[in-house]
Image 1: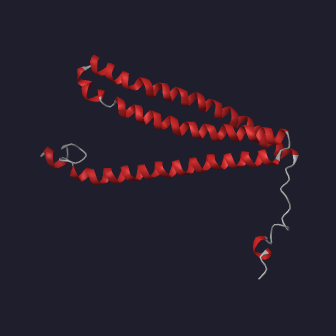
Image 2 (image 1 turned 120 degrees about the horizontal axis):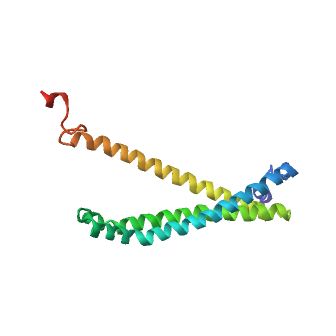
Image 3 (image 1 turned 90 degrees about the vertical axis):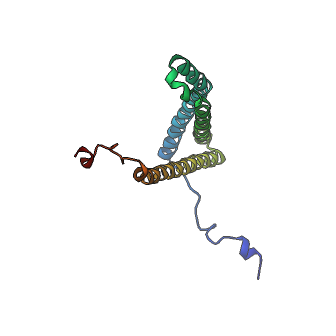
Length: 170
């Protein structure tokens, strides 16, 4: 068997290269501009979330000093700081992929650089992949919470109504 048959793909020669008309280039360029803008706004939002993460622990401590009944909540400042930092990290990567898509799409269309358009579309794919994985994780967490509530409700001493059922009124 000839080894050249294994390395060549039969469809490679028959498929013409993808050509973009002027309207498609315009749309890609505009999408790149908006993606770049949203990426920059996302970086700013990431900074704001990180600032909140730095101060949330202090805010919880101050609340506990002002309101003694809030004392048990004061210890949650570290947990909220961790959650805010985690949100900022996710937000950063969403923004980064959008920004990189925008930059490469604009430059690729402006300078007719096929490689930059390819990189841009790869960054867009990464953005949607991250968004899809995040969506699956969030839906899974919701499902687990619903299952947890369904399991926990019968274990409550008086059910959901807190003892105000028709039988307890008799």
